[in-house]
Image (tube, rainbow, N blue to C red; front, side):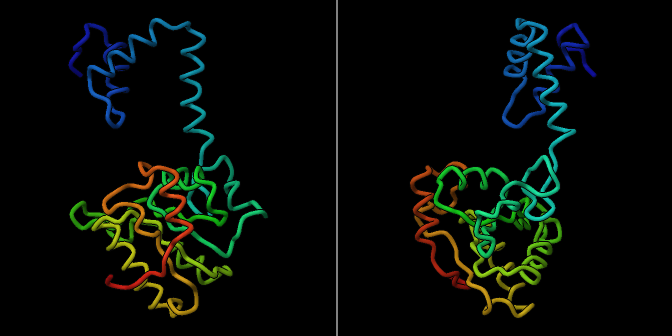
Length: 209
């Protein structure tokens, strides 16, 4: 590795920070120098929190949300409506919807969207596990809360067609967020009021709309 900062330890630390999304080399250097100005105990707590993150955080076996246990608190809760499943692209979307306090069902995290241009196919997402849940659980409504992008629409269409293939499209209610969420917007960047209203005013999914 090229030792840009005349210290292998410093260089490695900067490279680690720079590997994070949205963090450039200069920002990474500022972060590392900030760490050097802190008390050693504080830096150790920071480092230990990252170690705990890797060692103690798992993915829920049911919905694929992050969890410290095999099944996340949302899936375990008896206060949630388990007949209502909200399908989202990623974990950030779960957090965004939870913050609205307008939804009391459970979730299913796909882990992405179908994107032919990026080489992401349906087999790389948690779609088969979603179909298994639909066939084995008493689900009455499936809410497609995937961003209104071209890839999001392809993903919604694929899921709906898979529901048809297992004869479930007419047996459960399939809805989507109201168009209060602008086309192309990601849910995590949508303000809470707009997102909350989009959940409350969700509409039936219409194929090829």
